[in-house]
Amino acid sequence: MDNKIALITGVTGQDGSYLSEFLLDKGYEVHGIIRRSSVDYRERIAHLEGQPHFHLHYADMGDSMSLVKLVGMVKPTEIYNLAAQSHVQVSFDAPEFTADVDAVGVLRVLEAVRTNHLEKTCKVYQASTSELYGKVEEVPQNENTPFHPYSPYAVAKLYGFWIVKEYREAYDMFCCSGILFNHESERRGETFVTRKITLAAARIAQGKQEKLFLGNLDSLRDWGYAKDYVECMWLILQHETPEDFVIATGVQHSVREFTDLAFRHAGIELRFEGEGINEKGVCVKGPDSLIGKTLVEVSEDFYRPTDVVNLWGDPTKAKAKLGWNPAKTTFEQLVKLMVEHDMAKVASEGAAAKVTLPNTSKREL
Ligand code: NAP
Ligand code: GDD
Image (cartoon, rainbow, N blue to C red; front, side, top):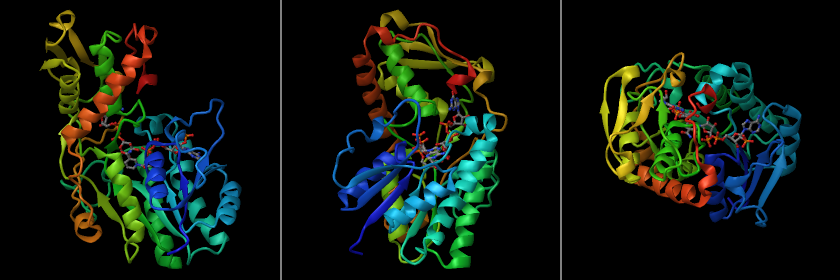
């Protein structure tokens, strides 16, 4: 294909920023959708703004008209629909908004393609999720594992998955879902558990925070590196036939293991004692001022009404059909790179950034 024009919804997010870099390197003209907000939060893509092949446009997943107009103007050859209210806990607090953006939003994108008669020239990638497996019915999970969504977010994403499949079958469109397991990075939002932990470990190590409060430490995830996962989004659209793929590392760890390793990289060894809500992480090695102190506590505030606790992906199909390497960045490398990034970030913030009272309010997530 000579004409490579990508339209990315969710361009300001973790994945959108890495995908933009990836596609620009491949010679694409990249267009991204941003939405108006009272503060201009484009930190993740600031380094791309001003590049001749990178363009930003205002639109919103809740506004069909803006999507139809933009798709008609840009005439993309590939759309990557990454925009979403992507926080599972927030979906319990704002279920209707989540459904509008994460479910009906997908339909709006597909209809924008049809309205502009681009069905035969524009492929669509849908950011689907391992949350569809929810209250898991099989471990590990592959493309044939039954779905059992277990949050308003997952239920909305299930609609997105099925409407993509429906448009593929009804209108012969090249549209596919990547069922991606958790992927993290130094650009991960600060209220997702991995980034919450790496930032807290860095702040505690540098005397800027006293304690970290977490929810379910037993929860198991298959964590990969976001930079490796955006390649897969592109590979899925380059495959000869439109198909859905599970993207995962095939390796599973608990929130406790992530916490333990992150603190180690920040120079602190923890011993976990107690169980459930009474479990604590006590410092047994590290700066003298921290020895014997409880640095990690469990708080009920961070438990979810229904929690997905056993995600473990089987990436066999992606390996075989897309030639994708799920072991490019290991769990250990991922934790290390996130902590190293946050140690430097926290050091550059200065003393004013000290978190004096550890916040256990739900707003922290
Ligand atoms: P993220 O960092 O939360 O980014 C979400 C993006 O969606 C942001 O750019 C956000 O814009 C945009 N957005 C939200 N509501 C919008 C609206 N109404 N109109 C236009 N844009 C809107 O998420 P991510 O981690 O990059 O994930 C990307 C996608 O993959 C999401 O769909 C997520 O559900 C899915 N997913 C993620 C993972 C993971 O582990 N990261 C795994 C599976 C699936 P603002 O910057 O303006 O808020
Ligand atoms: N956020 C958060 N904060 N999660 C915590 C905490 C805490 O203090 N303590 C324990 N957890 C547990 C959650 O209950 C969940 O079981 C697990 O850590 C991971 O939570 P998150 O990092 O918030 O991510 P998620 O798995 O719910 O959702 C992410 O991954 C999905 C793919 O499986 C998001 O990126 C979704 O958009 C994505 O679809």
